Length: 264
Image 1 (cartoon, rainbow, N blue to C red):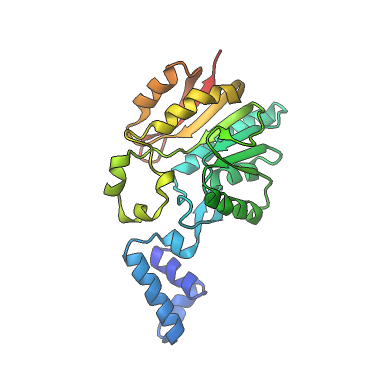
Image 2 (spheres, one colour):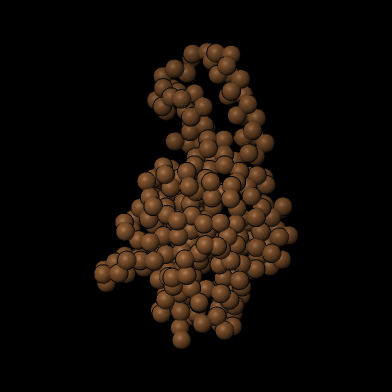
């Protein structure tokens, strides 16, 4: 369905076919007012996913609101990459221990938990409101995930069991660039977007601490923004005890996901 079909079918609680079969029917006053209100919101730039209260990600539907970032298609590459690593661990007879930093709606952690039954998944976020959404999504998809409030690794209680895999899609937009982006971005939580002056604050923090939380030969997988690879590579080379072993490009041939392994 295109955006208009999706919007009208959800608002009017009907399927796509009914929209066309009943196109000559007049809307009642209540339905008309509802459609008018929704259209005004959308025209102002309010994101469609927030209007619907839902977003599609990795073949599943997730609840979303203004407390969480709207899942992007590019982040599915992050899940695909982490999933391959998790499957290799399971093939070795291991139960993957996984930590997601900055879970937001929980879509990444939940997708991995669904695709890797039996994995031990912990997900953190600084926002209690975001964690409320993530927990609802966890119940919706019937997965067992320990959602914990905290600022990256500064989380209590965070079970200090070194992990096979740490995953993150951290804020990576430079502070000065956020207000120049499309109007929909203004409605998303700035805390989930703002990566500091150069967009790399969270990469420095994660790289500086994650080695202590990784098992031997454990892996860090994170999403990066356009044009950030070279600087992040330098960050990882500065005593982070991490070596880049793979870089995955997105559908626009942009380097989007980095895989870095713990080294001695």
